[in-house]
Amino acid sequence: MPRDDDDKSKKTKASPKATRLPWLRTPEPIRRLFDNFPLVTHPLNTLPFQRPIERSKNSLYVFGSEHDARHGAPSFNPGCLKWQTYLKTIGLDFVIVPSSNHASPNGSLPFLLPAASGADSNILDVIPPIPSHKIQEWASKNKFTSRTEPEDMRYEAYISLLDHSIRNAWLHTLYLSPHNFDAVARPLYITPATSSPPVRFALTKTLQSAALEELTKVSASLVIDVNALYRDSENAFSALSELLGDDDWFFGQAEPGLFDAAVFAYTHLLCDKIKRMGWKEDEERLGKGLRQGNWGNLLDHERRVFNKCYQ
Image 1 (tube, rainbow, N blue to C red):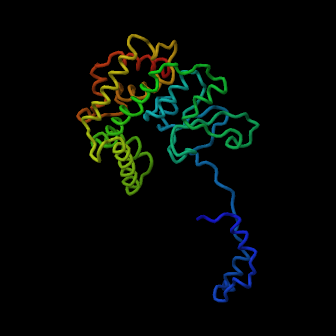
Image 2: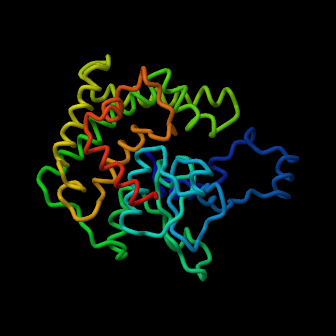
Image 3: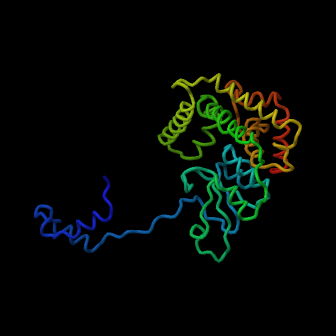
């Protein structure tokens, strides 16, 4: 059983003579050294941000390059791209900051650092970072948007298609397909992180092991059924295409919302019209149906979101 502070205080009341042993006494030279240089408890380090914080603007920390950040380009990570696109759909003024999970308060990206007034001495003391799952709530609370997600009984079911069927196939495509890992994941996630070959090797194994562990959790056995994985993703895209129909935005909304941003986060990166991702066609089954036009309205939707948010 762990000891609490009361246990410690009770022990400190015991007589020093009762607990002190002669052979445990600190040698005189060492004792004099620590008398001259006493132990000091320093304050906690601040969050390990990679650059001076831009306090006058809202800052979204995402996976991305310095070049992409300067030009406001879409993140190459679907989780980051979802929230980057959502903030653009509600018209929030923000800047992109390329970052990594190590700089995040909760160990994952993205997160939003809200703007603070110039009078604030330390932005981290005044306004804490907003993790991704609270960004929508923060935007609504601070009157940046009055939009709400559609009250449709099917909403959660379709969200699960993105969060499970399509995301699982994405993980396999990016991390467990050898050619795609070398062509896409390595230059985006491994090479920029470090120049040390041993660290790159360790990071590679970490990413691939995490993807494998995630996929085995949803598998009925320890062996991943790759064909079933991609079949589920194709069925998910078919369902999303049927849901969208002839509408401009999902669920018949007048403006794009969070769901539109979540779909765009995958369709944009998988279409890869400007060859930014560099998918290897022979191993990239996830986006092949999109690029071949099997779900034309999803391609049209991707184009509308891109033109609205990134042109």
